[in-house]
Length: 201
Image (cartoon, rainbow, N blue to C red; front, side):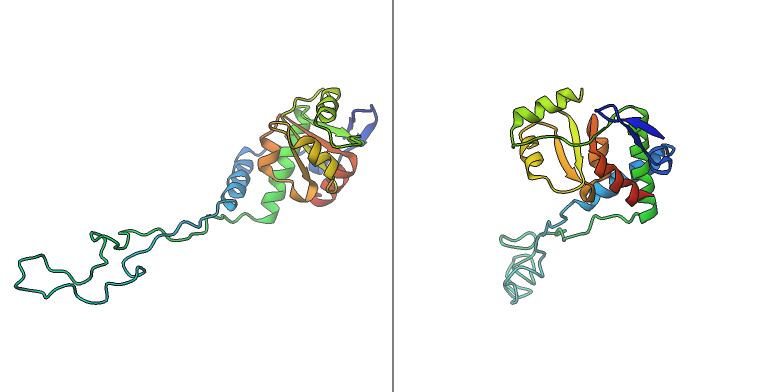
């Protein structure tokens, strides 16, 4: 299939990557898996066996008139352990590579169908200026809620877009389903398109 870039030139797109059927269930699974993988899961508390002290019986078992106690570090004691102490856990989910790539193809194909994918030869930002980036996006007829995709790390592009709310700049290597579905438009360079097709074909 062919679509025109911002300069009016026809860009050849692979049907296998940009003309796939939309699988909502698979896309949802990919988004949930990606977000779950970003959770730290580092919450931790100490149980009665983790806190220091409590190695000796506070008082004898019988004859004191007080309730029996075997340790001074039980949950009801001051400086005692937590009853159901939180432990570090792994929230990540497993998603096969073929399923992940299929979900990415599904999202990209839907972007093409909805005219939300804009292809440019070059962003043409000479110096890191937010005003220049806003003007460039306006010339592309794109809102500032856009995802900018380049084939390599471009510091000028990153610095120009970092102060624009809801505008994100990524490379093909860091392209992910969450970024693709959370922006109104995706602006991608021709060289980035070639790398995406090589990756997902």
